[in-house]
Length: 243
Ligand SMILES: C[S@@+](CC[C@H](N)C(=O)[O-])C[C@H]1O[C@@H](n2cnc3c(N)ncnc32)[C@H](O)[C@@H]1O
Image (tube, rainbow, N blue to C red; front, side):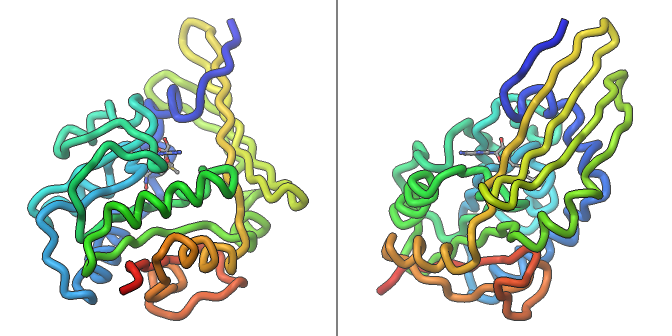
């Protein structure tokens, strides 16, 4: 039997294995350093598109409380999410009324918003949820990352009795990066999931952020404190509300 599944449903079961090479501890330290740089002492941290909450687990000793959110209930149901309070929701329409000092999103999650209307909705939500002294920090993948790394993302393996094949493609005209996963289960069922990311121009982010009443306080080459530009592979934005 062959089934086309929705994005981040079945891949959730092997996500942590696929991400084994990602140094989430170092990533958490970097995000914490950004928070310290703004002298923030947030009561509650809100993470958007937290996936299986591995980053939140590394951050949790440093903060009072973290609320993790994701569109995929299957990702949130993974064991690594049991330490945090999780809410299944779309980052473009979040069910919160209170404001937060520190909002975060990691690992290209904003690239999953496939059109400009969705990105505009996200920053409208950020404006609504951010406290006046607070920051939203997130990373995005830019075109150099897709062009340089597309080949490396073709891989296959096996985990927990599930064999997987990943094929990655970048469409330079539509600026869409797709990752197709084929998962074969012990009973012979084959499930395919297609994950698509939109690769927006570097300058577009500044425009959409400003239009939402926010501004880019800093924009770094990810994992560093060096200024980013359009040649960067992944960039880390720090966004604040205009006064
Ligand atoms: C590449 S994964 C990153 C997960 C996690 N941040 C990490 O670092 O491992 C992208 C995540 O974005 C989530 N996602 C995609 N679109 C979303 C949306 N509109 N709102 C909330 N989460 C979304 C997916 O379900 C997935 O868990």
